[in-house]
Image (cartoon, rainbow, N blue to C red; front, side, top):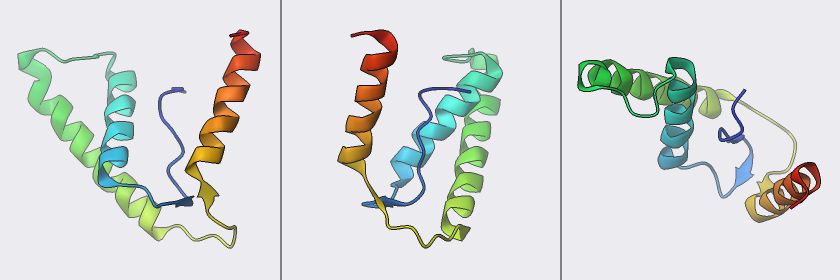
Length: 89
């Protein structure tokens, strides 16, 4: 859906509230079509970001896995390599 929304589950170190909020902001931007809402829509926009962040936090805390946590640096390097191959840069 949106390449800027990253997977947040099962990483070491664990996801931070700031990362959850950033992903929530990206989701609301994508769904609403607003990068920055007008003053008339700002309260609704920010409320949606807060609600998505709260739901995401509950989800991430409720998930379980037996897989070992992924390393952030290794996953970032893999993503960078995939992007370079996909876009030829």
